[in-house]
Length: 229
Ligand SMILES: [Fe+2]
Ligand SMILES: [Fe+2]
Image (cartoon, rainbow, N blue to C red):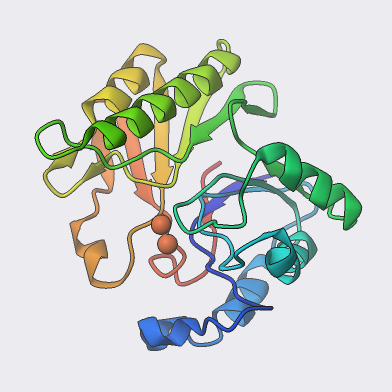
């Protein structure tokens, strides 16, 4: 059993959204994902850090979810800013059951245990700076902080690995509220997606205040999931 992470699959198997407009790296990216996942085993777990499908609703996202379901191993997904198909986690769960999708679970106000000692925690997160953020931004940020804390609490005394869509540390930006939660709950590692192309130059990867940070956007990983444990 192994734990992997990857973000931003940006699939569009039943919608007209070619990804190679974002550069040659994205050519045939679904085929690249299929190939890289082929070395995973059924008991492996992959956390997918948001931006899964361009489908505007669950029907439009069906082929993308069936594709993800066919990839080896279990998947834990969380919401990204481009997951327009997401209305509620409950609706997505019902859709998965109706469509025979059995390997995808949703990380949303909960956590998943991995082995005896590890908790997989997370939420979407948000880019928010006190000086520039609007009242609306602040409301979203506070909701995300609550979701993250619920998830971390559910992890109990297990070793906590956090998965977000938005990186809480990027360039000179730091989301202090999220980093405070990491410290309070003893988080060991944080993986995030959302950043693509040239913007990847600004990502932080390494250890900061005892937490290991990794950027797992699919294009950053050459469409091959990153082994975490
Ligand atoms: Fe995103
Ligand atoms: Fe993305």
